[in-house]
Length: 210
Length: 136
Figure 1: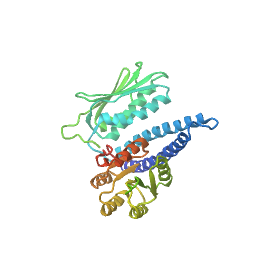
Figure 2: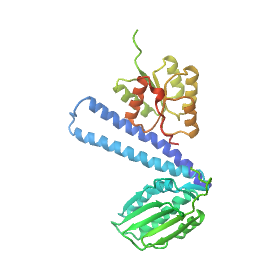
Figure 3: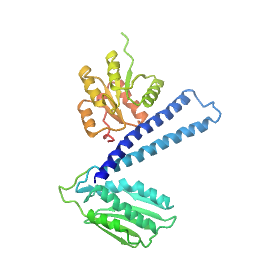
């Protein structure tokens, strides 16, 4: 836990600094755009390329900002280890990492965030680890062009579901996955085309947001 | 008697950022002075009170909260908008309790900033909503 806290502290600090870096890039690019607009239509040769490059800078700053927010969220998830967490929120937190995993395997990715919080027993870090390990198991059987679906399902046993499209026979996940499930506590299992993490609802009064 | 033109004092230790943002505001005919530390900002405020202070939170030397506390001592009704990439939740709560008129996060949405400035110009900045929360 101490290692996780340290990593979280340093990572959060770096994401803070990166916000400043991106702010400088954004304002510098925007200032060039301001000057161009004030001078009327571009008279520069290839002025249109300059315009499109400024558009790229803005898009990438926005992308970088979203990534930094995600990383910042991870860093802070390490700071606290309450007995419960919101499964919907932290499934959404890990989703971009799974999307990247899927893309590396030339697979599609679909994630639909649950509409309402789903408070379950266990801490956020373990939950995100469990989802990540489950995704690795599912993606192991996916072929290029397949799709990985991630969803949460409320109910008596709130469940995080990682499904392959089309259905593929998902192998038994790693021992690490089962260790994480034991720690949560959760019931980690597979079924045709899916790996599921059956979570334990938090008792009334146990709900706690990070 | 001529009405004093609307002017801005931007206090931010990130030199490249502050100067660039200042130039963008100047291009829109918003007179902007830039201070690169809290101490310098307080000196410039004492020389001439601006219509609006844009204040970063995390700075070496005097922090944004400390600068804000001193501003409230010497100019209780000074309009202040916080612009920051991050802050602690404690800073955010403290800034709220010291009556800031707005809270914007970096990288700024420049249009949002201009809207906030416009509200201040119209004298309605006390109604400016704070952002949902800080990036901590």
